[in-house]
Length: 239
Image (cartoon, rainbow, N blue to C red):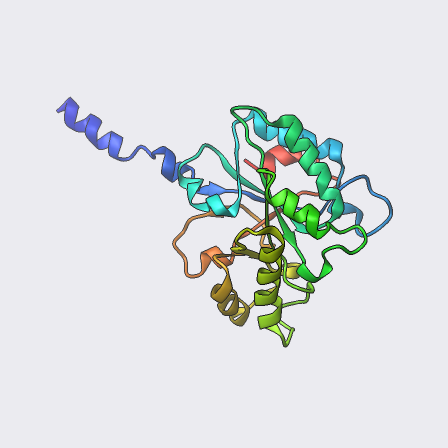
């Protein structure tokens, strides 16, 4: 009788895979001191970014990119670090990753670059994007060609297909994920995105959790990390 009870209980104990299917996807823009350009809350200072990444390191998180998306069921505390727009100061994140890397902690992040803005002032150059893509620390993905509201543009094919192809030419790596500018999408945008990408990212707040919903991989939520986000608040965001 006792053996039967133990077996029944084991059937209801969640395994690591089911527990790990929840994964926060963090959203950053500038990794720099605020200099008066743009929205202050979209900045995170290099010092704070390093404290946040060190928190993830000390608390056993596994940093993933979208090439490893399916590993969220297999690793401990999966989390994605994403950067929108392709700003040159994202190189500060590379420096942080290099300082924190250890045998048991391999930092990685995803930069969503705007293909037609590559090389503009304050934007990463083509050579920098290629170097980052081959550094072992970053995946370079698409944030469209010109950063329009995709629900209003008349040239979806150019924004989606051209940006993918151009970034692939720059990095020599597959582009499989798209971050919707402004987080804007509709059914048409999702349908077109599915022709070229495996994942689509919104700005819907909250962590991703597998629910087997229709198109859920093209409606991935993301969590903003802001200038004013304290380390205590950060710990709650990734909980």
